[in-house]
Length: 90
Image: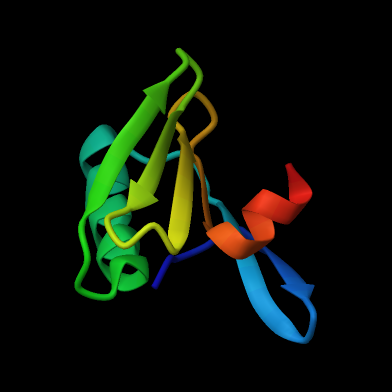
């Protein structure tokens, strides 16, 4: 799904709950295409709502409120996770 870079996976209670994509620097267009693919994949047919832009990145919630996404546009790191895990960790 993403060429190059690194993946960080978090397993909690025997299930995958968070994936962090650290990708090599890309053009704005390439990053937008990659993020469109990732958000479509993790959206599983649901849309995403932007919750916050803090000047470093953006936070999103899937419309069914079961997943979240973080995109650091300053570092081009994208994270997808379950709200179940997110609520326990924060």
